[in-house]
Length: 230
Ligand code: BV8
Ligand code: ZN
View 1 (cartoon, helix red, strand yellow):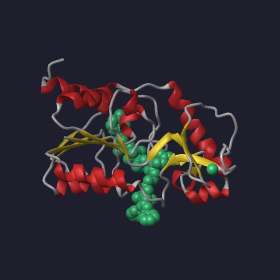
View 2: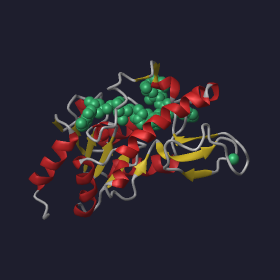
View 3: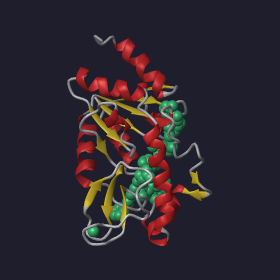
View 4: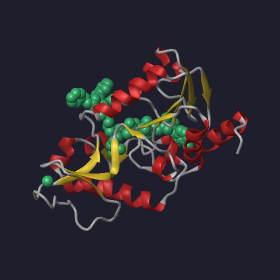
């Protein structure tokens, strides 16, 4: 069983998705802000974008959809969770070994010496954060548009997609690559594909079954139907 998630699974926790704000942030297309060029041009503006999301994330909690996915890790003989989300809500719901294709908003990385650290404070002491070791500018430990994904994570996710009997894709518009390519890989490798999304994603045509509803309601309903011993 492979579960692939996007921003939609965090929507019911009160975390805005990328498309809901029609992909804009303070009037800027997110693709402009979430890029290395955007950061080089105005690190403070980019940090304000991430700071706002971190502050909101400190106030929200995982929703029933996150909790079902975490419970399924104990119920399926093998369940791999691949997420495009950087919010850490799967981990807060109890999911283990989460494959974060696009990094984590709680990771901070020095753009100079690449030292990494975790920082869960918001607001942070000062913006932009400066590396204590080399004095370099620190950045959010996420994958921006135009940046490569962590190869070991991507390869592990691709191996899981190829082996999957069932791939459940929840809460993603499936427009961003190479993450969306994993959905195609699963479908082309013979997996049954379940889409959980109130709206058809770009890859809905690949779905064996489409469950058109919010993941916070659909996943608990699916869990009840599966009749796992609670
Ligand atoms: C790379 C981390 C190359 C940061 C993110 C033209 C064609 C094809 C590709 C490209 C192109 N131009 C550029 C590219 C490449 C680009 C790309 O794919 N662009 C897209 C816009 C076309 N990709 C990249 O740049 C990637 N890197 O290609 O590098 C390279 C190669 C070699 C060497 C150097 C470079 C990197 C992409 C990663 C970007 N980082 N996030 C951060 O979070 O700040 S992307 C970000 O948006 C998310 O992580 C996610 O991946 C993506 C899409 O968001 P979704 O999760 O799908 O959310 P979205 O809002 O879109 O949709 C929400 C869905 O939920 C909707 O379907 C909605 O109906 C549904 N929903 C709503 N409520 C609910 C719900 N579902 C269930 N329940 C609900 N309640
Ligand atoms: Zn440094």
